[in-house]
Length: 352
Ligand SMILES: NC(=O)C1=CN([C@@H]2O[C@H](COP(=O)(O)OP(=O)(O)OC[C@H]3O[C@@H](n4cnc5c(N)ncnc54)[C@H](O)[C@@H]3O)[C@@H](O)[C@H]2O)C=CC1
Ligand SMILES: CC(=O)C(=O)O
Ligand SMILES: [K+]
Ligand SMILES: [Mn+2]
Image 1 (cartoon, rainbow, N blue to C red):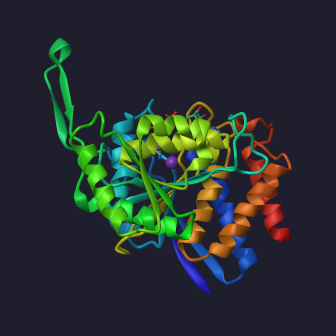
Image 2 (tube, rainbow, N blue to C red):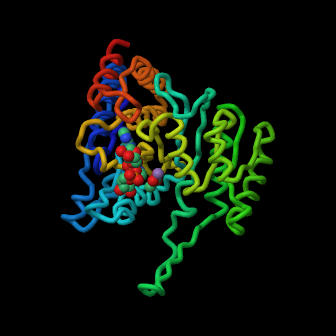
């Protein structure tokens, strides 16, 4: 029996609703499989916890998390209680950084039964490899003065090590996919870091002569996501470009509520963390209407990560059979609740 110890951090808003749903799904997957068991431990680290304790997690929080095989997170942020940069840097980004989860993997592909807002989307299937440890999300900078004289400086950080690591990851992935890597750049406007990014990309591409490698400025790339998403396979992007591009990727799939993500620790020293692309959606929290598919597809990425690719495929196929038969939440044009969709996926998994 394979045992996996998972730390659940539902977080804020709809994070709590969709993590509960996806955890039920994982329990069903393990029942159906027989040889795989999850042991979930839940941590209520959210913005309410912050108001009580003055931090998003206890002092030994990271040490406790390090004991787990994986972290399953919903979303962090309740801007009415805690400023977003405080809550995100105190939990989500802290975990990504301290557990060296330097790659954020985010797919965008056509899902049966979910209508893309694009008029005529060809069958696109994209994997964005987002650099997850530095870039524009840096803690280097500062601010001075107040009022009319106020200034803020934020330095973007690009190291050869992290840039090359993300790019090599993308090329390795392309070998197993359709053999094409596109680099998201902006070297026409950002004159130090992005020409550097381009140079590293050219260097890494030389090691992969069988992979088609090209560069695209991020503005044009964003437009192509709308007009011709089928021209892409793997995309490698900096932290901020990857963040924006993957909300767009979610949108062309039909909703930000269905897009999954995996924060991968590539050196094996710490657990990886699995969380959907979307945030805590305060506008719909507590109503039971959140789309659980982003979190459930994220569970599929977690299964893949632990070598259970076959189970992962079963889960994604089951999601698609449910959407294809019209079990849809509000964000994708349906009337079903979070629970309806979850129950239907569970019922079909059991029938498999
Ligand atoms: N990884 C994380 O934990 C992230 C946290 N956030 C935080 O979440 C909070 C809200 O941020 P927003 O910018 O509004 O982004 P958001 O992704 O939470 O919501 C954007 C829009 O998409 C909708 N939406 C999101 N997920 C959905 C789902 N599963 N089903 C149906 N509709 C869904 C929301 O209702 C909203 O209209 C903030 O505190 C923000 O900092 C935002 C992005 C990522
Ligand atoms: C913070 C955020 O939006 C993200 O990491 O996707
Ligand atoms: K999230
Ligand atoms: Mn984001």
